[in-house]
Image 1 (spheres, helix red, strand yellow):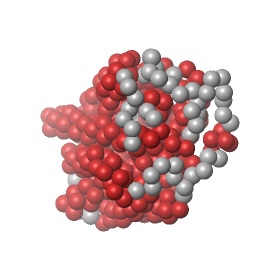
Image 2 (cartoon, helix red, strand yellow):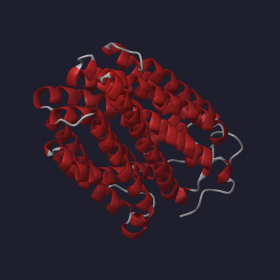
Image 3 (tube, one colour):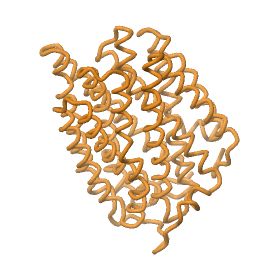
Image 4 (cartoon, one colour):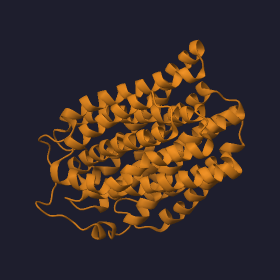
Length: 395
């Protein structure tokens, strides 16, 4: 594998700061929005609608964002994304109705999309194809750090406020913390995106979407990514509901989410060695199967038993995103990488709209057991796809 290209020091550090802050903002805000939904009496169905709202605008906008990034560079998308994250988090801090939460969470989701497409495209365009596994592994280590910092900061702020002012008071301050992370992400995006780095573009050429999707192995990569991301989404959304049913409070749930993020970061630190030793295919299939088993087991656990299960789940789920990122980036041609990465996010968002909506219905009938069983079944199915799909680099 090759290292990032010469001059990467000018953009890689700021990019990592932006990546940490975008994920910290997201993972701080989303559980707090679920608690706000519980506070206003929205119930499991309401949580499902709010969770689906996060992905609604990105579902329709992702391909256009990818085209914009391919044509104009990453900086504009990164800055607009940070602005939307910051503004919507501040508005969520004071929102009190179900439909306001749905709308604002949708704007937050659009900001997240813009930021993530820009960040992923920076790497796809500035790192040689053979270095994508390494570069995306490092990138996702930093996103995992954000996913660790976000819930921890939100739980700390919310827990302190809960202790002094009551349960409902903790949500607003935690969402203000999320807005602060968004602001820092915007500042870090100024030097990290766009600029004078080497870019691989097909001048004036616009590839048809059918051609991009038709690249060998592309649709299997998209479905594998969809299952992994949808599962993480449902864990974020329904772990508070699991905690309520098991007597685990907001601080305990926040600690479990932070544990998941920490073991995800550990798996990404180990990913390069695992891929070199066992091959991309073996690592991806095995981790997806382990994720399916642990997700199915989680709703059967009490708070103590959930600790090792969540730790193993986080390690397994952590490998799916960087491996599918490098899978997609490696299949895409120069000049269509932003579009290909946006298609991956479109698939993710489609799953995040449909799966939580379905999960909300399932939860209404079966509780959180049905939600996690649904996720486990999706993961098992995509493990079968990944076992047979062609991959572009070392398998």
